[in-house]
Length: 244
Image (cartoon, rainbow, N blue to C red; front, top):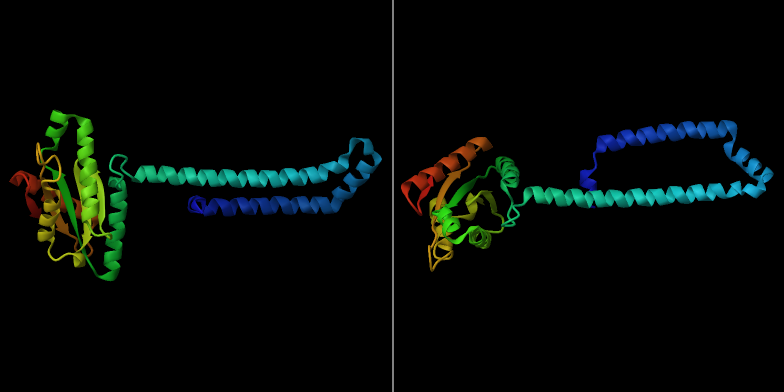
C-alpha cells in the first residue's frame, strides 16, 4: 500500500514500545485491584445507571477509533504520494523535472558502476525559442514544449531517461550499448525534431551537447561537462552538436 513507504519506522517502533509499557502497567493495576470485578459489583449495586453497558461501549469506541485512525493513515499516504509526484514531475510536459532527473541519473551512475557499463547524457536546447514567446505568446510556447516532450518520449528507447531540465532545455540519458554512436545518435534526435515543430513558420532547430559517463565520475562533474558541451554547441550556431 502507498502509505507504507512514508512510515517512519523508528518513530513507529518507539510509539509501539510506549504503548506496550503503558498497557503492561495498566494490566498490572487492573490485576492488583481487580478493576473489572469492582466495575461489575458497582454496576450490580447501581443497576439503574446501567454501568454494565460501558464495557461493550468502550470496546465499540476502541474499534471505531482504530478504523478511523487507519483510514486517516491511508488518506495521508495517498496525499503524500500525490505531493511527491507533484514535486518530481514537470506540470507542463508531464516529464520528470530537474530534481527527479538528478535523482534518477544518480541511480543510473550507481547501476552502471555496479555492472561495469556506461551511458551517454545529452542536453538539448531549442534554438530561438525566446522568439516563439515573443511573436506568438507564451501559450504557443507551452504547446511547443509539450510537443517537443512528446517527440522525445516517442523517439527514445523505453529504458532511456528524458526530463525537462530548465525552460526549453531537456536532459536525455541513453545506455551506450543501446546506440551505435553517441554523435550519430544526436543527429538522429535532431532529425526527429527538425521540421516537426512550427514547420510552416519558424521551423525550430535544436542544439545538443553530450557527454559519455566515465566510471567513478561524480554526478556534478558530469552535469558540468554536458552543460559545457551544450554551451559550445550554442556558440557554434543553430542546430550544432558538440561532445565533451
